[in-house]
Image (cartoon, rainbow over all chains, first blue to last red; front, side, top):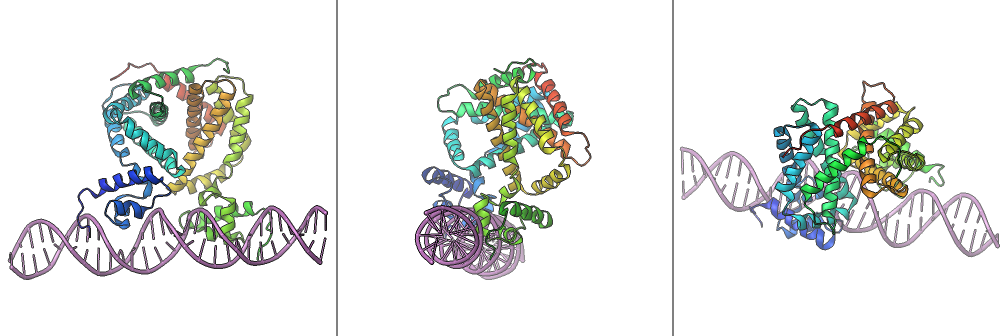
Length: 192
Length: 192
DNA sequence: GTACCGATGTCACTTGGCGACATCACCGTA
DNA sequence: TACGGTGATGTCGCCAAGTGACATCGGTAC
């Protein structure tokens, strides 16, 4: 039997990714994933909290980077968060468009995965918000700034991933941030 | 056996709510819920998509009201969304603080329920955003305005539910909206 | 009465997820 | 070299979430 498989975790992630693309998320069994990786179902559950987690291993690194950058950046709360996301866009996402698109199409096909992605987003927000507070931000500012920053990132990310887009994620983030500023500060009464 | 139970749906919701409070969400079986309502497990699944849904029946009404109000309101996109949430705060939440607190403490105790709540929030956002676009809003504005509006509501709602608060939800929403405007419009240098 | 229909119950099954225990590889040490 | 320990893995059995197929009952129209 498969005693001591090097990088079991990585191989399970890869197997899961392949199978999700081949058959779809729901049609893939944890046992299937483990089998393709040459491991047992039980081993999968020792390395991942649940079936969904196999697709979200990267979010830890993103969170780390974000928190670090926010802590170092010297700017308004909201600006700091946006800047951190732009930094992350360059360091983590820049060269991975195709991969991200495949991943996103998997997520889009399953409500369960969409829920998990939402949760990862708020976890991210909580961590960033904590980093902001550690820098002396008051709670409200920290919460709203990160929440808005996450929104900006989400929208920019969605555009970036969209099949017809070819702009750089960093630029999209900057654009969306500007748009958000315009929208929330507008005070007039103009529906259109 | 129990043929023709009046308001099966309502009784299942009530049973679920009670049991979740008594034993917790994870410790409650769908079979338990059905039994308390005098029905069968299978019937539960015919009326609710899954175990979690029993706690989220209200979100449909909220969505309806929001969409209607947004469609009628004549103001800037973001303002319209905020106004719609304030209206909803009065029409739906005003007299239900205690109930909402109980519900929220159940949700807080289970990651699964938190995920579902997040999803309901984005579904709400999608509906509101569509209503905005139907009024002539461009896509970006609609998305960002509703996303920001939802954020405002979320934060205000959290404060309202917090055990030491006693302000009215409507007022909290207005306050948080003002804070958000201040934060995103703060002119800082553009870092990185 | 009968024929139909909609709401419910029954049964069987797959899968997610977990606890308990058995193994095996490897490692340091006497 | 033999030994015992440790950590990663496999095996087994279980409960609970969901679901499909089929049976059943109450009422209703004809």
